[in-house]
Image 1 (cartoon, rainbow, N blue to C red):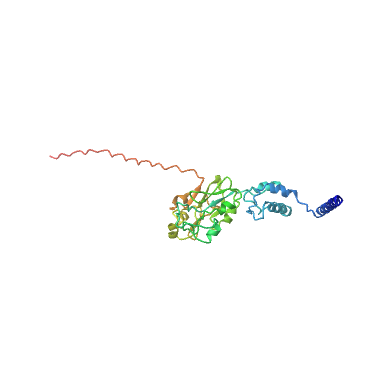
Image 2 (cartoon, rainbow, N blue to C red):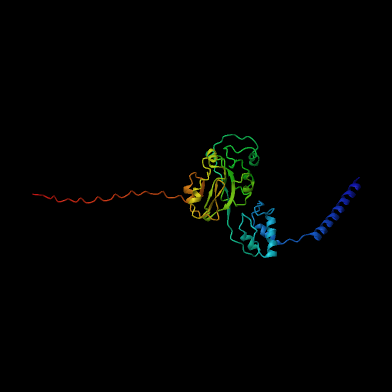
Amino acid sequence: MSNILLISLLVLGILGAVLAVILYIVAQKFKVEENPLIDEAEACLPGANCGGCGFAGCRALAEACVKQTAEKGNIDGLACPGTDMGKVAAVLGLTAAAFEPKIAVVRCNGSCQNSPAKVHYEGADICAFANTLYAGEGGCSKGCLGLGDCVKKCNFNALHIDKETGLPVVDPDKCVGCGVCARTCPRGIIEIRPRGKKDRRVYVCCSNTDKGALVVKNCSVGCIGCQKCLKECPFEAIEMKGNLAYIDPAKCKACGKCVEVCPRGSIHAVNFPPKKPKVETPATEAPEAPKVELEKTVTA
């Protein structure tokens, strides 16, 4: 019995050794040599595999950068929205275009206060599912549903739902502008916009293209398409998309004039210093005209 056991162990050991040798030979014969620059380029990327670059992940983008560098000598057209591509370019011995940081912007202000609930939703806690069933608790068919699909998908923990407003809030210190939340939102209310100079930006915080009367019925701060901002903008940075005003970040100079004329408060200006209140100076009273005494004429 013991001999059978020893023979079995010996056979298994020899078989394992033979298979190990075969696997080693096969691995050496068919191994693929990989450019070490790929690892260095990948190390410069965030590693979130968010897909914002258009590739399957950070590794795929790094491979594309190395391949294009070898073929064309540049990485033009390849970009990670959450990383300065200058770092990747430096690893590859190239220079990249200036990096313009971006951030996610929630273009809806239909909070629990601004758009009070008319119905109560009871169902799956998924925006994509709720979007197929009803307009929303406040009645706005273009507004945020507040169920947090964007929060669940964010790889950088840069979003959370505000319990008081019921709306998603973007953490500017964590958001890299990858665009996953924008692609996840079934109503398209999240937009990826440039952060702007000094992190200042102006945008229309509404996505509702309905006519004004319907907007007023469902939300106290929704854009009604009055076009006052359009007429006021000196840089032609505002256009109308149906009944909704839209500010082009490429043209906007952040002058703030549109914010002042919007009757609904639909346009938000972020990170601007508070304006000093105008001090009205009392009008100076005109000095009284000197009294002129007329000489009395005495007639005889």
